[in-house]
Image (tube, rainbow, N blue to C red):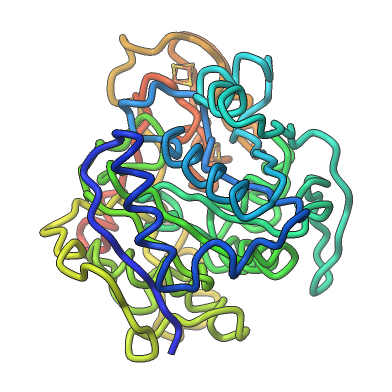
Length: 374
Ligand code: SF4
Ligand code: SF4
């Protein structure tokens, strides 16, 4: 049985986090099972955008620091790396605002910017992946427990999309606009990187229209760990209320034999009661049609029921232009507020992810609402 370990942790107090992480990793064999002396270990937190920590967008630095210390005590050399969703304007400020500069200062971990990258090809698709992911002996994915307006849920697998530097992520969205295609790309990236350990920061995550500033912080009160990122995501996404098969990339990963997405085949150890989250507000997402329809029916139906971005509070727009920079279809003219050209839009919601004011939200068409599509 694949093991997923869950423990209660309701605070980011450093000692409590460290104790809880030790307890989470112990049933997996402890950190020493994964880290050998001298190994270069890359910690990949979710640093999608340097928003204030109380927005619960990024993996909390206390969690990253505790994992770094555990890796070092097992004899590993720690690297910390990620690339945000939009352009990296000032990497020093990025590390400082995400709290990673403090982690590096306290632990002597090395901050590795995901700027240099190399092409890898899988199943006929090219991916531009940051070099540290391949230079490290072990990758530990350190996601944040959040909803996602494109993939419904983001976690250990989706976190790896940060391996593609900055705005190069737009190329993947551009060539894979539909959720199933984009999900297959996520699984390609998982297959290329193959993290050896996944540890979830679920102390405070998000519900609603995550994963950026548009999501609502939500206390889940847990940390979780597994050697199988797909199993970890399966357990947590189901606890959040996602239905089996609904997080498309988890199903795809399981079909390819990259992990387990069947709760019957996963042993959850530790304090299972912490998974009783109660009702979680899931985001408005594009519904993937699963009934077999001919292309001439499904294509226009998907188009008219597609989720689109909408400005919820134009007066609060800061005019920063990040949404326009992140858009893979150049469907936004920068301004205050920006202008959306929805005929070009593919509904990827990259603009909402990067908006620092959280004023872009997904919106269902009247027809989608009429059809009862979530
Ligand atoms: S407008 Fe927003 S949702 Fe539409 S394609 Fe651009 S980034 Fe994606
Ligand atoms: S909508 Fe958001 S991302 Fe776009 S310009 Fe305004 S504040 Fe910036």
